[in-house]
Length: 58
Image (cartoon, rainbow, N blue to C red):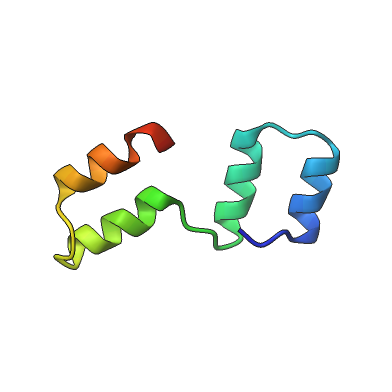
């Protein structure tokens, strides 16, 4: 995740993780699960692997 001016402001204001994530995703960040799902669609991984490996991330 790139720390943009908007992200920096949220950190300074002690924003919660959910708000930070929403802004970061809106600015182009991809979560681990997003990347893993792309790999499952490409046939590099399976949906089952994605769900197991990213379960704790959500």
